[in-house]
Image 1 (spheres, rainbow, N blue to C red):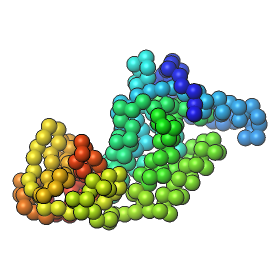
Image 2: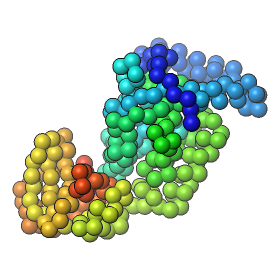
Image 3: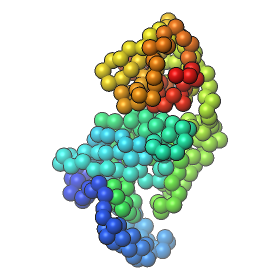
Image 4: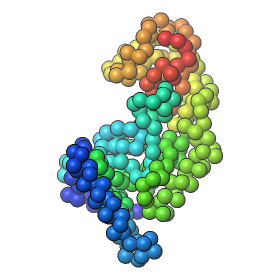
Length: 282
């Protein structure tokens, strides 16, 4: 695994760049590509190897979407990181299904990375035109998260950006297996039905869960749709609550929800971001 480093002085983070800066970046990128020796050149291979050996230990503080996170370096600096080779669906715009895919990818990344200490390693390009760091994220057990989110079927491979051949091969193989096995978002919807009382055995899977609503409870920043006779619950974040009117009419009604089954302190749940995830009309 890459050697750990504590310093973050190599990076200047930025939320964005002016058109002049973007133009300069594109020109610099083109000149950089023109200057890179052929892949067979030993010096070129050595530079890439060193970029992968260099590592910074950081803490993931925010998960913005399935392929972008915000991290804190040991000196307190916070930077956005774009996962190399990973393409997750957008969480805004598009259709109901594309937004669902984007939200599910973000949720998977959040559950896996939030508040975790990870290591960043790099390829030939360190930042993009938006000032985001381009990196591979290595988890504490040695798992490459870029590969994990693709292998589990919550993202695909971003092929246009040049990566080291062996790592691109790993990502492509992960996507091939996810597609063949219909893992994660490659499967549906509709997703396999799971009984509410057995949802705890399906944590980490995309599924449809049918249950009779015991009641609707507002608790802190979320609203809970609780199942009768079991501990399963559907959870609506505060910023999405306006999309779900007439919740008070759900008590005693059988509904079906679909999404990623999570575990919250021993209670299985599915996060709802849109009525698209609920069969009962609101």
